Image (cartoon, rainbow, N blue to C red; front, side):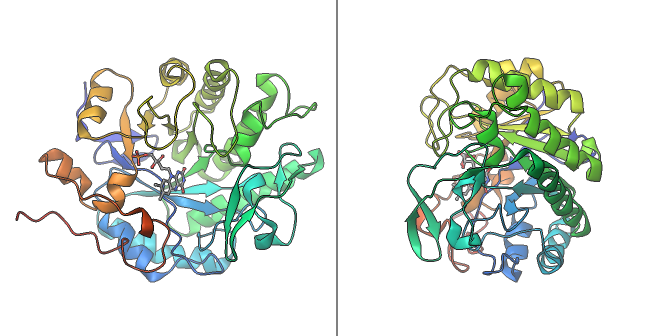
Length: 359
Ligand SMILES: Cc1cc2nc3c(=O)[nH]c(=O)nc-3n(C[C@H](O)[C@H](O)[C@H](O)COP(=O)(O)O)c2cc1C
C-alpha cells in the first residue's frame, strides 16, 4: 500500500505526495471578492501539500454570500488570482480552485435578491454578513429555464480559473450548499427532472460536473461531497443509496478525483448519523478517492493501508502548520489553530504560523 509520501496522479494533476490541503475559507479577499497579496503568501507557504484545494470561491454574485470570500466571476478577481497560483507554482506546488454556489445560504444583503435553491426552503440559523449575523431568508426554487444559465455561470468561472493559472477545479458539492441542496432529500422537494428519485436528485451534480469538464477536461476536475450527517440543515434519509449513485455517475464521467468530508463518530467538524458511507463510495468510484475530516498522519496512513483511500485532505492542521507534510513525516508536534482568526481579517493567524523549529 502507498505511503502518504508517495506521489499520485489525480487525473492529469501530478501530486508530489498524498497529503492534500482541504478547502478552507479564510475571508481575506476584499469586499469585491478580489484576492489580495497576502493570499499569495499564505498559499505559497502551504505549497508542500500534494495539491492545495483553494478556499471556496464564488462563481457568481447569485452564489456568493460569505464576507470577504474570493470569487472568480470578474476580470479583477481572475487577474488577482494569478499571483496566487504563480506563487504556489514557484514554490513547487499545485492548486485547484474550489468552485462555489451557496444556494439558499446566500443572504440577500449580499445580492439584493432572495437566494435560489432547489426548493422553497430556509437554512437554519444565521448568516455571516457585513452587518453581523442575520437570520436566513426563504429561498426561491430555481426554475427549469434557469438551469442553462446556472451551467453557464459554472463554465464562466471554470474558464476564469484556467485563465488565472489554476491546475484544475473542484466542484463544491458538499456542506449544504447549492448542489448538496439538490442532492439530499430534506431540501429537495421538486417534482420535475431534478427531484424525487435519486437519479433525478443527482442530475444537477452530473450536469455541472460536465460543464466543468467542457472547459477543463475530466482529468482536471474534482468533486467534493459530504455524504454523512447534517450540513447547514441539509441531510438525507438514505445516504447509503444516494451517494454511491452520485459517485458512480462521477466515475462514469471520469473525473480526476473525488474528495469526501465524512466525519467519524468522534468527529470534531460535523457528526455522522449513519454508518460510514465512504466504503460504499469507494466501491462505486473507480478513480482516486480522497478522505477528509479529523485525520492526522497516523489515521491517514491507516486509511491508505486499508485501501480506503488514495490520499487524505487535511484542513485545520494545514491552517496552523504550513509545513504539515514535514511535520507528519518527522512526527513533529503540531501547532494548534486559533478559531478566532479563521475568518480574518489580516495576517494574524493567517501568514504568521511558523515553520517548525526545534526548541
Ligand atoms: C476555517 C474553515 C474553513 C472552511 N472552509 C471550507 C471551504 O471553503 N470549503 C469546504 O468545502 N470546506 C471548508 N471547510 C471544511 C474543511 O475543508 C474540512 O472539511 C474540515 O476542516 C474537516 O477537516 P479537518 O479535520 O482536517 O480540519 C472549512 C473548515 C474550516 C475549519
